[in-house]
Length: 439
Image 1 (cartoon, rainbow, N blue to C red):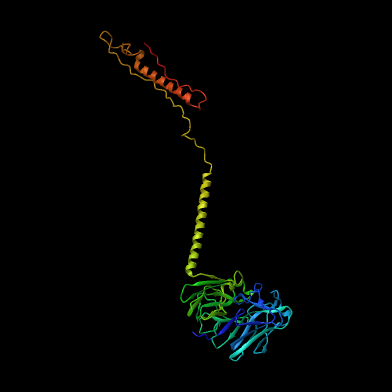
Image 2 (cartoon, rainbow, N blue to C red):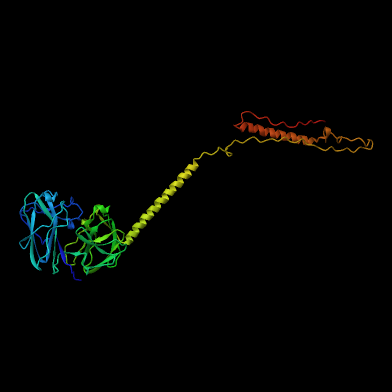
């Protein structure tokens, strides 16, 4: 598929750039640079503060722009641009073109100079340092527009390219400062990107925390999220890398991007690496991390589901552990509650048996049948045989049994007195009935 909007990107480290002069060109650190306008392209800058240093680039096209940062000292520190004279000048085919207005604070992704009224043909673009005040500038990248399709360059796609981008009706054009973007704040609104290449990066304006997802050729979704600003009063963040795809096979691809939140999702432009390009789009290392403008990538829904399941399972385990601990503490508290002292019946010393007083045996008096010599009105108290019955009608055998029972009870009581440790004094047996053995 032919690219109708052909703006090509030339990084500061590209071999097509020719650096000359007093050898003041050197890689510049990008750490202290504010991120209001994004990070440097591919995370690299090349700076100089030496008068007479220059760079040149030959191309065929109709426009050219140079992006970089002014206000650099030789020690890579930045300073207020308005305090110093212009330190460089740009020219096209030996014709000087004026620099673009700069912000007071050095910012990346701001054009140093540009020209968009060129005839379609070969041109020579140059930048020269002019004032030696140990204040220089840093080059980030160049862009040029051409009707040809040169190889070896990443393509920059603007957000109004109808052959590449298919927005659903919820997307609208909106202007933030001097930057126009396509934006939506509708949940699940989509844009389809059809292109030929091996990699794609989405760069946009980040206003509030943003959540979105994208699919490649109908595959699984990959989620991305950006912290954005805490408040609209802080203003938007420009040129923010929302996501960069992994390396794709050469050929045609279709990416569908969806808004997964209610905050605005905005597209500023795309970077696409053509199949024949050896250069790469902004790498993962150039994606901001752990900052107010950070964008993090989340794997596809299967991984997200696994992560969510693991998190939920962990929470359930923690809750069950807490409940088990609470039940254990409650049980332990109950076990420590003081209960009334109960006698230990198993270990208590045996108490002496209670001896019940036997009842006095009562024997019916057997009437003696009177002989013929005796009067019928006299009644005998018992048989006259003294060997069988005692006086007053008591049975001698019964008396002997009672005495034997008494002796056995006394012997048992005596044994209990010896073995019992808890008896402090001997106990007297209960009085037993006394029987008189009257002959």
